[in-house]
Length: 359
Image 1 (tube, one colour):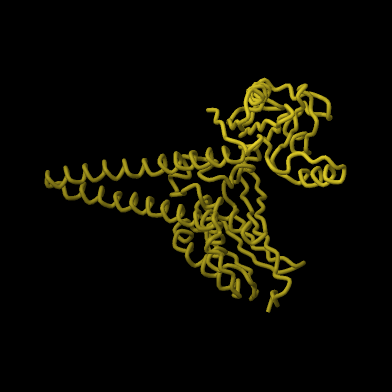
Image 2: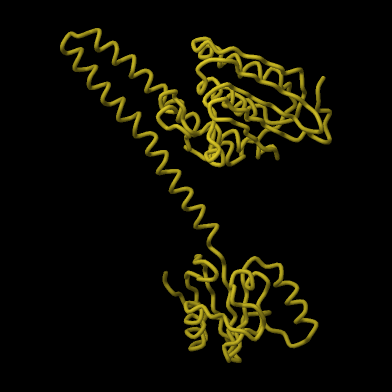
């Protein structure tokens, strides 16, 4: 992290930093109390002349005016600023109470005091880490089907060259399955991007009953192959929401219920009561261990990785559901028992200025 010097105004005094009157002092303190940056005025003696609430929170040692900061990195920066007339800018680690990145500005004043402005960079660094992790996860998830497709294509070509048509045909069938898996992953990535950004959020008035019916009908072929029955209780409910996003969320929950069940019944219900729309999907599948439930809505998190890959799961479905619920100022809940099934429930507030409800 480098150090940068910036030229101050003539005389080295930024406008509005210090005022002489008591009224202006109070105004300054009131204004700085609402600033997100930590602002500290360090007297020529090294003691704290002023620290706004953000500074007192960010720097644990700043307990009261008259104390000292006590952070070696900041103390060095302040000492460096007192040697000249220029503002010094540096990114450093604040070690109070825990190490966290910050951008520090040390502004020398004519009387020998220094104004210290600290901007906490933790949220920015966290977003960068999330982006890096996401790219790494996507690369890993795409690498597996790409490698498989390449190997299958080479094997199929070898079989054709050897006039082994049956073997070639079986590998071509597997090629189709892997291509479908990659297509599902890319579709889920695009869907997740849409719901995360919320840019395409487009509320409209529609009937939830049709949305639930469509999600169940889409899952029927796989459910029939696994001898899974559906019980659907979804009366006509007119709501104002984003139909595309909500359909995506319900489809993911129904699809998961079928994928992670070997038999039994999947119940899909929708109700409007107490000012909220609730859509629940209950299965009799493998269930989720209690210590895993807090992470199942993370991107690419799978309780059983081998089983998820075998069933074609992308690890993004529940992350999509969570974001859809949050986009509607709602939430998603899970109730599960290992070996006895799971119930996922989307809870969305109904529009207070619309005529939403059961029709």
